[in-house]
Length: 289
Image (cartoon, rainbow, N blue to C red):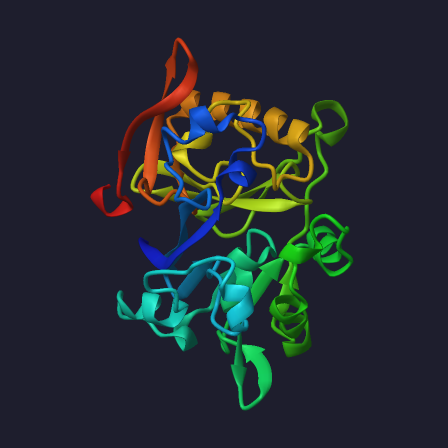
């Protein structure tokens, strides 16, 4: 088994939106904004090579939107997911599974491309994985979140016949309020969380004696480790706080490695308990494991 960091570029988002109720005087010390209050964020995906399967977790923004759309996000770097895969010697046709943590445009935009005036899947030989509850949430979006769910990123996946749904276990939900895990492969489990968006999926990967958790938008960056530092984008911020507390306690006790999708500087970290709460112990690249 081998893991590859897939760097699908960077984009900019408003710092206030990314840090919610945290005052700018505090977050700007950790992630300095530009003159328009925009901070730089990564679009960091992950490729799992496991036997005859190549599993791509998320795939960035893609390139099919118009200039007005991209003008809001100031994309930089190598934002073409196909070129990002080629860095490691892979082609989009090699991918066997596309695992979508959730269907916000910055996580699934590379799923679909324009070809001959049509929208087609970018990974022609892959199964695309979501879950029924989140799929319905994304295709029947609420007014607050619908700008993040772009139908051109989502509907062509189902129309292609390549979409499959992961079943969500309900055990323990009544007493804990936290959805459980389910098995995806022999080496990858899935944790379900609800604070950022309904039924987001976090892969937990056993690798070289470690458990690596792909954080998606539960913890976008190292700077979001403090419990109250919750994004303004989260649909249910109190749920996020509950999920962060539960996850971080488990993670520090079990020595998990956190893999960050949006942290522009830090790829991975381990955790430690401090006087101020659970914080990063050290940060490093996945390739250093």
